[in-house]
Length: 414
Image 1 (spheres, rainbow, N blue to C red):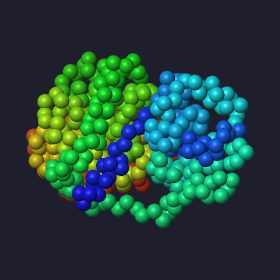
Image 2 (cartoon, rainbow, N blue to C red; image 1 turned 180 degrees about the vertical axis):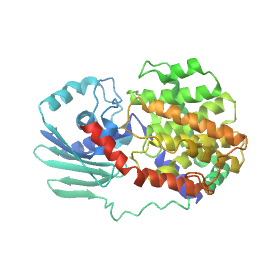
Image 3 (spheres, one colour; image 1 turned 30 degrees about the vertical axis):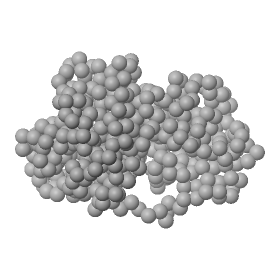
Image 4 (cartoon, rainbow, N blue to C red; image 1 turned 135 degrees about the vertical axis):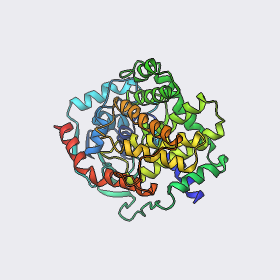
């Protein structure tokens, strides 16, 4: 179990430069261009409507005003480096703007939105002397097929891919025991990177005039430790949604989940002058609890992923504050009794407000738990068993919100 949880953290906690859905498109464009070996004369994109939803409003991580599905693809095509993964366009600047705009204005890129069974689906085709297609499914950088002139040159058959059945390994109690007892030397490098990078963008977000400057306004009205927890975390989110060039260590394919899984713990730990080793263990707990939820929910959903990660942060705050195992469970139950879901209508600056709202609920759940208060089991969706309660939320996100997702996307596209 220990080895698998360590592996999961190393797999899911990686660096990204900007919002991950535009980066997935840029990555596909860069990889396709690598195999085409020349500039394309035409580009055709097929992608799931959820990709469109999460790309349309977010700024690319550049000194540029470009945004949207077409620009994200072409940024990768003209300037990306697929070998850098989620950092595939971190070196790109405005010098490609005119070329991208001209390509779009000439009608040389065609986009088709499809109702894919996979909410995260990209099929990008570049056409010149040769034709190259790159297909991505399920996870942002998970390339499932590459074809050149209709011949398959790479394939990863996702239908035969072994499902990551982690339900036993990711039991709430197992996560707690792992965080409490793991040899920190195995994970210190990645956890320290999350600590440093995610705090840095959150601190910078407080001084940047981006979005509605949510962090400054929160702090102006609440300078307590809890105000700082919300202000810093929301500022980091707002900064990256508005095109910040600073890196973020993501969680389960999302920078906002990475921020909300980590920054509340970091800020609280700094304010209380707690030992770094204790903060690191709380970060491990929070990150794994987010992964537990996102393995079930999936990369993209109508269920806002920030809700999952903020609840994890709340439980980790109880852990960090010396709460008992039962109080940590109480914290999570109190949160899910209060904030069991917020809709995702795409990545954008207002994600920061959803994050601040979710953290309000997480903080309240934590404070109740530390006073040994919990909403009654078997009221609403709250069950005696914490894993069963979380599984219900996952089912609501997956099955219950399918129609919600369709309705959101219909009204965004029209």
